[in-house]
Length: 223
Picture 1 (cartoon, rainbow, N blue to C red):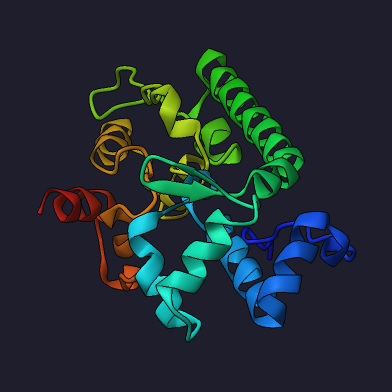
Picture 2: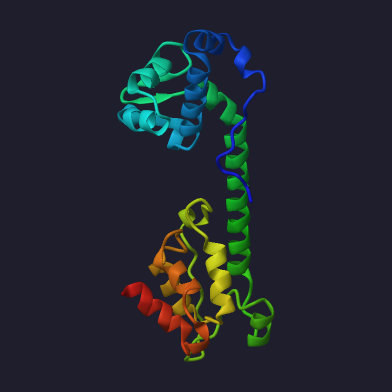
């Protein structure tokens, strides 16, 4: 499993002049506080922490706010803007990883969009062909006419916030093929948004007892 909390740590970090000054005045305890703050910032959005959290941080590592605040402000290892503090060094070390993840996310989004367009542009096929390609696009409705799955909005392809592909796979596994039901489920679940009720319904339902899974999901999402 990928460790989303990883950050580079130079083995020679203690030889940095600023850290040498910190160690000279604060000792190993101050050095430990510094790395605790770096680890804390790594887990925050934008790698920024709020100054109002200093009391809580100090309690967690059994020290005082005065010590934490001194290490943030006295050694040029951190910067303070408005009510937040951050580490320019951490931001710089994280940039290559962030750029790589952004490029990969954009590549996955474009691939998903391309796949969706191919599905949309594929000409109508008979029911047997639809089954062979896992019924990715239904073409026959109850009256013998044609219907299709509506293209989702662009934000639905963001894998950090949505799992559209996984949701479509789960619907296909449950043989929910009616396009009207699929469209309703997609819309009600905000196109597979992470944390949406759809995932609890999918993974905590005994499907062997459900005769109409599509209607069941729609009812559950509306409740």
